[in-house]
Image: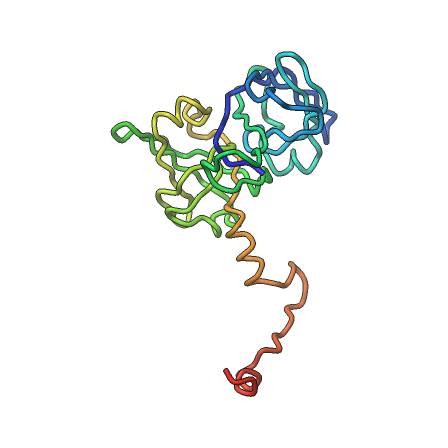
Length: 217
């Protein structure tokens, strides 16, 4: 589990692609502290498992599902990436619950400065937008942010100077892709309200008015 509080910006050292899967090597420093092979590190919000360690970086495998769901396959050598180690049990919870499992890829459509902040507007897939709530939490490229506005086409966040200087978000431009993860609480609520799987016949509830009356409700 992660918090969406980026620890450092690393640099892609090498991307090895086998067509459907690959390997990602990242130059880093702070996230290497206490890290062992098999540990998890979020790279632009994507939970990856460390497969090898170097004095100044780490390597992780990237499976086909990850390439389908994220923009990691579009990274090139030298690309900056947001990095966060999995949350320690005795750590502070500064962001929100982030699993590192991306729900979809959005596209930056506008960046606009307002005072000391920058508004970033993002177009997102419908299934992601369905769980975006104004003043709720969203994870963008591994960054825990508060949704400032939402409509039928996308949503917007307001980025403060500290977040802008400590992450990659404000180095991007309109048209760039970003990894999006919805608040996990919203996903579980949606699942409980829609218990049938896609393509599965919806089961009729056995809770009726007669049943409630019979049991004193």
